[in-house]
Length: 432
Image (cartoon, rainbow, N blue to C red):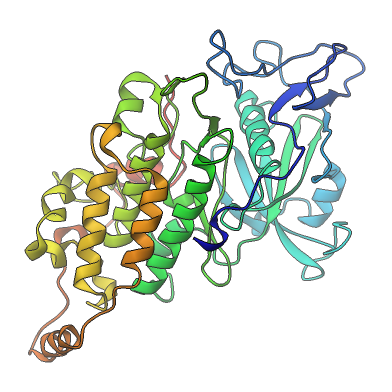
């Protein structure tokens, strides 16, 4: 599987702690609180039976406010000052905004390629600067989780974290810049210049599967927990990289099958057993992968209140079509214009069904998913399938099929449509 399996960066800590006068273990990461006026300490503990929450969802600083400043002791991340990142992003100007999410706002900035010093626009290399909302304890928790995981792992299908800033109650992260934006943008926005080809979709699916499989097979397994199209970023060559590790968790330990935690995530992508019980399995991520794979196949959001009743939830609507070869064409994204191998597309539908199994034990592991995708990607259209497409295109008045899911809704924005935007486009999350 090629470059799917690089090792984690050696000798990097596996847990995150606030500074304390007490000695810490060699495998922990220390954050030094530089607030001299108030020297309170807060600690995210190691995973134990008494603490089912190793990333501190209860909260570093929970009940004590957000520490104003800090420093991470780690050799592979640069510590930026707030002033440097203001310069790099032109003081966080609105026209530098790349996107927004639950953590905060992401800006485009520029830094020197070698020294990482801030530079002027179009000088040096572009970066993405994620800035949290001030005084947000949830923002701090997600910031810590991102540093914990992206500061530890290096992989071609994980977005690269270059540095951080923790100053004046602002939490910022600096990443490599991904030129093509998110998978969500390309799949769902109408103003995208050119839709994805079948081969590009397969390339993206394989890259995302590779990143997720890597996380699941590290020594301390990682559950991503928020796998969705918005968190899959694309570089200039449409290589997929997973981003936003704010909700990631260490997998089960001590022979346990799952981790019990508060239910957080994104509607439509979260596995049913997790939503119902708070039990989080490695294969809970596989369910989310199946949902994204269905979106890649259909070009449709998992949830869209603009669709007719019975079709709002893509998974529920699509299930009857996934197992029927004769109904396959109705399921496919019309922007593909029938330029895909039917055999490969049908095998993708079977993989989706396996990933969406209600019982997590029946779902394949991500290594198996990856192997299946790589095999399917070698399937090509047959000459007779090209001829069938050509005859179909030549039929008078033949316009490509449009299922009810692709009907354009004209007129003004209804409250239902606005609710849909809030539900699907603005990083919706749910919390117990």
